[in-house]
Image (cartoon, rainbow, N blue to C red; front, side, top):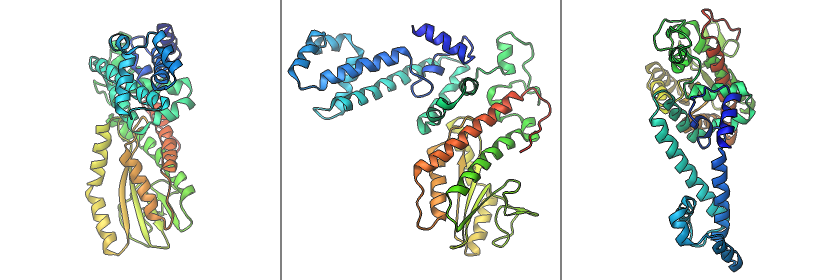
Length: 382
């Protein structure tokens, strides 16, 4: 049954036949497999019997051959259950025992898939995305609202099984494996979505960055109090378009334009945020954050604000090309909003909602960039 279900899922999502099952069944990424659902049902039954103090239920357990001696040698499910029981109180409730067992079973499943992915040369890139997914859970909240085309793009981009020139050559569909835009010899998914110098020059990556930035600007405008004004480095969103400035010229005249500037007129304080949209891995997100935090021009800008006696806040936020972010980015956004507003605390759930909207924009923009990989010209009316 699971083989049949896997075959139909791959066909529905337009996944290649050689796509690893981890793309579909890695815990918490797409959907559970039939075997995973079966294991959860067994753990639920075992938890109810193990945690029950009813003599009749205990007797039923013995009748079902669920005695300790049998299970410890024959059932991996009982091993998980025993481990979960040792981590909880001496007489845990059935629900707590089941949830802990389910958590341990998922960890075992992840470990099994990780070992499998380590043996793959191309699809091992999926590990980068699933490690981020465990941090922020963006896909888990977004995938149910995706159509098959969007879902297929996300899963294939994460596992590098999209029809890139490199993969098309590997699959014996075409002879050349060169990037149509820059002529590079390794046009992988990462190259097309965030590493092509010609795409950067043409403004393809700027388009995605500005789409995400516009989403953040719009949502911030809705949640900020009346004494706060938000500006963004976008046409019509700046504090001044001639000359271009995101910091109000009345406060400071500077050539530097942070992506987002929030000015509190009442306290005369400013909060600055810088946005980056790197590739989908913890390493790329951390490198982008470190680079922006140490950027010399922003250090000079903060020093100038301090000299003028303007209370300021500066931090960075990173949204990957596939909609993932680090907890530090969410905390930066939350701290920024709460810093600039007096007597108002923004909920973390509100921040997550805004980040989920921005993540969906980043994914759709990346998909558009990939679909235009063979077009020499790039023209988007923002």
